[in-house]
Image (cartoon, rainbow, N blue to C red):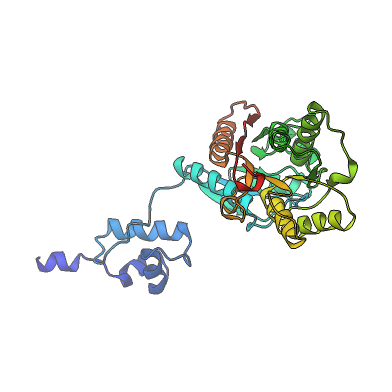
Length: 341
């Protein structure tokens, strides 16, 4: 290497001066530290690549700009836990995130409460993101319609509701509730409880499917077997323990989510009830923990990977000015140990 070639090599100090940041920031950026913003990382790497930086570049840092930035909003819960730690929410965000990565789009998770449509509209108008994915409709159907009326680009995860003017993607909840209940009836269960908050739009459809299956089998609906609970396992534990204390007989449980089902099984076992010998239990979602519970949980599977791809595809088409329609995805019955077969 000649003297001129040695002089042309840039050091950390040189990159820091060019970028107008500290040497430590340059070092962190080139090592893909989470302490440095993606924008700064890209700027520093571009400078390093174009100015013959003498050090080693970490391959994980990329210079290409994202095509779009999409924000995920999780409205206040209606039974469902609004925390990011909720297993189903995590699964769904994973499906959306994977789909966005495939389309070279960035993901922003917003903690807006979406109590009115103005906050969501301002998020897009501020330039922080190009469009929104709303996970769950909760009690905000009216606000989501208002958001669509002022042409804010968004897609919602959830059910198709009356007079809906926005695009939604969701599972066939009525079919799922029907399939879950029919399976317990095939297992010989006659006194089947429904555990879940039936005021929530998606759960209301699962409950409707439960009612339809009972009617088809000629089983009379017993209101004492309808136990409204939120999506916390502790709430489901209390619900089944209360039924036991009140001497309400039941031999099956259709749960509105897997976390409810796992809580129900825990409550039954604590009460000395055997699952599935005495009571069969089936959940909804097919979260990862469902297959590792004890006993392993039978459930209705929602395809979050396909749902994520659909929501991203529809939102990007909206951003291109296209008209998109809601989609309802089929569900699958996953049979494990908690039903006895």
